[in-house]
Length: 511
Ligand SMILES: Cc1cc2nc3c(=O)[nH]c(=O)nc-3n(C[C@H](O)[C@H](O)[C@H](O)COP(=O)(O)OP(=O)(O)OC[C@H]3O[C@@H](n4cnc5c(N)ncnc54)[C@H](O)[C@@H]3O)c2cc1C
Picture 1 (cartoon, rainbow, N blue to C red):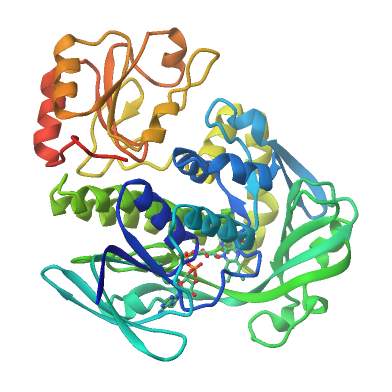
Picture 2: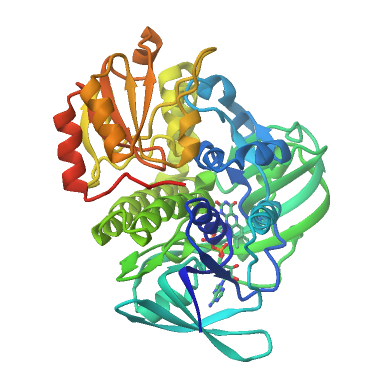
């Protein structure tokens, strides 16, 4: 029986990113998938800014950005009239290095992640299905079925269930997947089309009885459509084709579809697993939560789960933290999953509902909010921050403490870049680090040196205040770029007290 530190079952985006991060952190992994190749459909198209920031930390972002289409303009139409046009690069250019929606189809995305894994010597074991596992004091023993039907065992300290919405890991753990399924059926289609909305910009169109999302691939006339079926095909599953779609929005955007390259109907679920952890076994990505496609959050949230768990697993495997650290995975990620399901649920009910309230909100309230936001830059920034997940925080986590300037323990470190500095550059080490903007005391520097935490010192400049950072404050940053401790003064006592409470050892930690 072969033994590994972390066994990952499922090589979708979540499992692949977990494997990449764990590898960078020096952990041995095995990753298996029951299929013989990565997905061949475009599925999740949008890679949000926060995901790209996490990719930047492991040197992946540049290539993804090069291969994808930067979608900077999003238009909102109601009953055939354009009500708002958001220009993301102008809204988000002071918030993140990636102020757009990056359109990069999931099949190409998975292929790229797989290539990166191969380049560090990790091959996905394909045609290999997890059928069962048991847990013991040392970890887990999994039974896997190979392509020829033979059964092997894999022994590991931890098992990561990244095996999608129908997770076998979740089933074996008997963890309930609470929530529901919408009655209505939707379609996704990759098409070639001409017309008003074939302008390489994103479009969202709302009608009394229809909605449509248009996402451009960046290639001439190629785009993804997401929308509804004709009323008599709303709920029944069947062998449907593009002719069965509700074409009101398509017509109102003057789209003339010439070729349908991929077409699929799908049902939308909204569910969250009751537990994300059972001893040494974890649920991540679609295995832990599924929600409506509003805002393209699904895949991005799975990738966020993977990064959140990766550095914690690495610290525990290397004996640099007590096992209690792993409990913060569920605390931090399940809360976000619940919030996401609730908000996407509400938004989805409005954009797709048939009730009087939903049609009213769709034709009056949404356009009103959109056109208001259109004229209020602060509101636009807020909308962008939520959509791109850069405002996601872990303030409620036991790891988070304090406030300095406008930054709380649990917040993502604000990005500051000018001609002189880029405070995200040091995050590529994946190491715990203290950021000090202004003066720091010698005893802090000495203590950090002793315990092995890196100190990044930035001479104070008024610009920092604009990003919410406080002069002479101290920010302890986690390997995933979130602030653990925000201390408005640079007193060593605050740092020491956090260190004792957290039971984390900085020394040797990180890549
Ligand atoms: C048609 C369609 C369109 C979509 N469109 C969007 C969109 O526009 N925006 C968006 O954000 N999301 C979209 N999604 C959802 C998105 O694809 C998922 O959120 C994302 O793939 C989740 O990634 P994951 O790695 O968690 O799970 P998955 O991608 O489902 O990967 C799970 C992997 O586990 C493997 N596996 C399962 N069981 C086992 C087992 N027992 N043993 C070994 N391997 C196993 C599977 O083969 C699979 O490769 C769409 C999904 C579909 C199906």
